[in-house]
Amino acid sequence: MAVDEYSNTSAVAAGLDELGIREDLVANILEDLGDGTTVVVLNPGDAVPEDADLVVRDNGNGTITTEVVGSGTATTTGNSDDNVIDLRSTGAKGTDIPDAVVASGAGDDVIKSDAGDDEILAGAGSDKVDAGSGADFAFGAKGDDALLGGNGNDTLKGGAGDDVVRGEKGADELYGNGGNDTLWGGDGHDMLDGGNGDDQLGGGSANDTLFGMNGEDLLNGGGDDDALYGGLGDDTLNGDAGNDWIEGGGGDDELNGGADSDTLYGGNGDDWIRAGGGDDLLYGDNGDDVLDGGAGNDTLYGGSGNDEMYGGRGDDTFYVSADGDDQVWVDGNGGYDVVYIAGSSADAYIDYQPDTITTIAFENGNVFAFVSVEEFVFEDDMDTDA
Image (tube, rainbow, N blue to C red; front, side, top):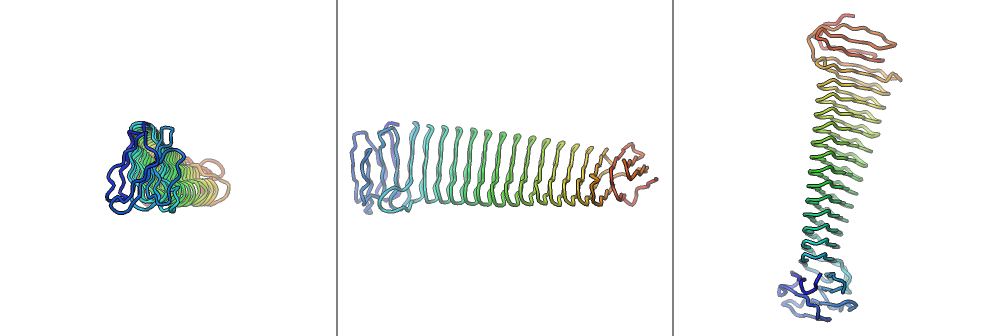
């Protein structure tokens, strides 16, 4: 960037309104700006004076860095070129950094901050933002941006474009908005919202909440007890470790619970639901679903549609509706399995074959097939014949 196009506005001193940098400036010291604040403008290689509060340096390669040495609030604005704005403390008067407000302009910018609760608007262009520690707010706007929250409870918004947003430590809120985004919560209880586009979301450690929203999304809960919501589109949701709550929403979704005791809802669409280990609850909801309880004592609800349900190992319980052509298949490797049948006033005929396939045929034309089921329970108003 041309140095003479750069300006800095600072609330470090009440008497300092605007500081312009010209290419012909050498080490200049402006002192006593209403409250004794010292602002230093430096060329490449110049040392930082001990009495400096705010340092603005021309690096000699088309970039500007702002070094806040004292305390207060610094506001920095770049132009339409590719700016480097560095608000990290490097001076001799300590490491306390004030709250910063940064707007970088339309280029492909690099913005680095440190301690303090910062507000960063990256502007148009493909920008890289490192907000540092503190409770920061960063907005990527247009372009393919990379936003890093660092320590603290941050709010990071990607804007338009394919963005990479990482919360790192703290309880963060991450928003992908438009584009095919990648969001990673890191440590802490995080909230991730992919927005429009085909997004990838990872909660990391702690109890996280993930929203895929629109598009074909991939959600990974990570460690601990997470809540995953796929939204619209054909999504893949993985609970991973912990007792997770997983909802597919609209679309033909794939839900995977993991090793612990999870609750999984397929939602609308033809879903594939795998609970994994643990004592799980599986709900097919609407659509022609496949439910697999896996290991553990699981409870499976087919919902409406023509469903297939597999119990796996353990003592499993199945709830099926006679309004659809449900098929229930139970893993016979141990366990005591029970099927509850409801939803039809039609008479039923049972062909019970304990060692092979038991069929139940209803007068309305529905036929159920069961393998290795130990007990059947019917609604009180259903008539059965063997």
